[in-house]
Image 1 (cartoon, rainbow, N blue to C red):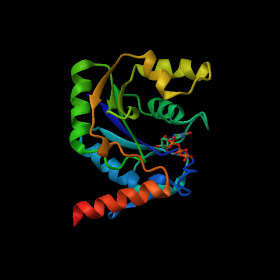
Image 2: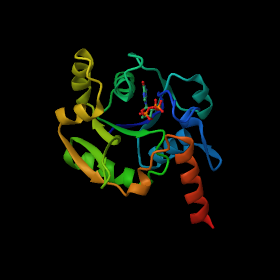
Image 3: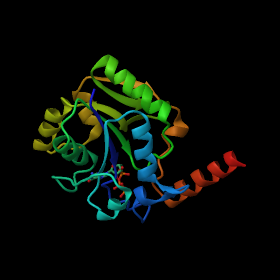
Image 4: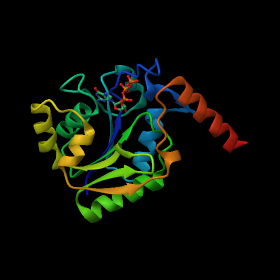
Length: 191
Ligand SMILES: Nc1nc2c(ncn2[C@@H]2O[C@H](COP(=O)(O)OP(=O)(O)OP(=O)(O)O)[C@@H](O)[C@H]2O)c(=O)[nH]1
């Protein structure tokens, strides 16, 4: 089954103050680290949803939003139009701690159920760690038409199942202090 991996990196990163997907993690960037994991989980092709040319050096195709400034829904929309497929494994560029094993489980569940799979844990649901069915594109188009760009509303309108993912894997690095917290935690684990 053709499943495209999408690293979502088209946001403003205003809280971080620098493009989140280009932050370093080991010898990689957040975006390439996630791209590698999507490849390892068996995605047919990995693409990056961004309007920032600086991502070119990572070697993945870059997909620009067709509707600018409408958030991640706009990124998903442009990627689905550019790469028609049965499924799309989406990971936000600020979630670098997602594991290959969680992504593999998500892919297996998607293949078994044939509808979209959303990551979830005790904190909340994670529509940006998810696998969307290709059929969701028509629903996204309707949402854009009515100018409702909320991912939470999108997933209310499509068939979904949930996959439980440990909270340390869904940790979002949105701010410099989130980043410090996660670097400190990695250092402690490594020591
Ligand atoms: N393609 C695309 N992705 C987006 C857009 N807005 C946000 N994203 C992505 O969606 C994910 C969640 O974004 P947020 O953290 O809510 O927003 P952000 O703009 O990245 O960061 P802030 O400016 O600090 O809110 C990140 O992976 C972003 O890169 C957009 O307009 N287009």
